[in-house]
Image 1 (cartoon, one colour):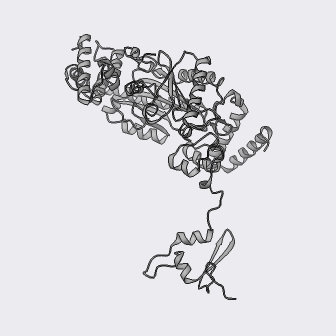
Image 2 (cartoon, chains in turn blue, green):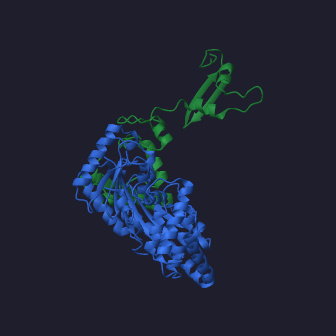
Length: 354
Length: 167
């Protein structure tokens, strides 16, 4: 598999369609699974990790998994390629850099299903759906899990459920995350209130790139904390209910913006496009912020010559590894900011939006 | 007979009497040993060391104290797990169970899986999840101090447990 071939395409999570895509970027569910007869990854020897990897690869290749998944090894992969996969949400930062020894990931050409091998748990199965699609994502991941289980003996306990390296994942092993774009709640300064309420009901809020990453570009990942004591459909229903409420607040805030300060909002969006199309140096954070304004502008119909797919492409291509792959060589901080600005300028010129 | 110090055999001048769970326990020490065990306030006007007093009365922690647990399968000690937060192998859940259950309860406010199960483990049978549901109801009834309801639930659970998993 040549990773560079993926460069022009958008993964499932950036398709920009799906239910509630005015404020929901994507839905992701992951299941943590371990093989019964091995120590967890952090206590496994290199030989044991190899054995786990071999069994996982065989199961992935031979089990009846739809869609077809291709496996690539991550140890031995160039750092730029690892970061590229992190940016596309196919692997975690931990699998890319923190862990060692035999490990890898299998995924399909649409990038909707991925299975990390020898992450903190032996298997981390993940399904992505564009928009808000908790039920669809669950049906799909449930099927992938069933298929793999016909060829692997999972560590399972009658009382505690699926056993995981960290007790925060035990039971269902399921973490469902919904990636939300909430600019209007940010502008109207209600976002903190929403998050405080979420913490009280045991839902976690994170930035785009997982644990510890800070929110940029008004993108927030909301996920369940509890994995034990409730069935998967019940956990998903609880998250879905809360997401529905947040969406109502965000849409209300957008309406207020349009009613009370349409002109100012239009100005902000136009300036964002202006900066993106004319800057000669720009870092990731500023790019994320400006693209957030553009994204909101599209949803509020303040812009009509730009679509969401294009914004998503600008978004992923502005990420550091993508940018360096587009340039064809490694770029350090300053050069990267210049290359990012050059890329954005040329793309926006092509689109004739200036 | 005059009591002697239980540590060195000198005449005891410090006498402690503690009643723990209706059992009376007496300790006799000479002044030197009492000072060494930090049971006497320092002559310089220090405070009485309560912790040392409690340790003497209760004795060393029993061997089955959760912190002393060790997994026979992977050799991980419970204390190591607490330090790093990661378990060593699937068998740890059984080996550390007495210590893990309270921890799981703190993290998840539950200790029993109620979701999907591998087909090899019998899948998620309706009785299983019914039991899990009942246990959850019992927990919340107890938490809310609805004891009559809790008693009924407890009896139902026992009946059902007796039916499918004899202990």
